[in-house]
Image (cartoon, rainbow, N blue to C red; front, side, top):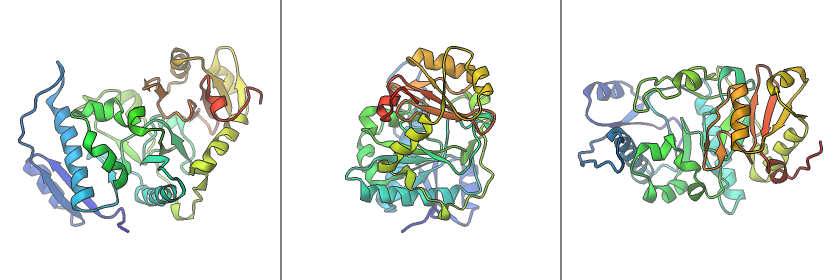
Length: 323
């Protein structure tokens, strides 16, 4: 089994400073992608850089899976800082993926991410907790070769289709599979200036809490994340939370001891409630960021969990409306 210490640095282009920096690290194998094919953008206003990034991702993953023959790859961009337990986290995640592959006839986990979209300091507390999600977080993630076999032939031409619009969370691509994410991020994105032009950086990326705890993942029991266990596990968490009604949810959440849950009616209602707390309001393909079965969970200033529950979430979790 290859370990996550098999490091490959792929460069898109010929900048000598980038190349020399990569070659200065003894434990890294350097790969260079020289793309000279002309790019024709498909829509007005699109940046050529987005096409270059998409091409580089596909080239790099094809190289690693098909030429280097890796069974799994962690994708990490060069504007990310990693947590002290980053590699141990992904080793544990690799074992989880292997178990999922053997237990499920079809893979139920599409990828494992080191990122939580709502991982800002005020919304996280426990570095030991992981979740399943229907929304692809990206920003430091692990993929199996068998999944890349499926994705490579239809990989989109431009970067926004891959990530800014979360191509991997489109139903036509994930086909009901989910993603593993941590509560506390194992990566920190410091790329305020780049191809995404610093979008959302000050509000959502800069305040991210990077995990600083050396979690011993080898001793952690992650069986609760298996498909056959997680639904019941998560349903119990939601059911045990105190329901809140009416308005002024932030005030009410502060006045209730323990976890709380808030039902939203539709996307507009979710956005209104999310705005009150300050979490991501964005949806893609009918899914809120970080959601599982329509439920978005985050901490609020303390260890208190807030569950924003969709109109059909309780039914999907096998729960009634009563507590």
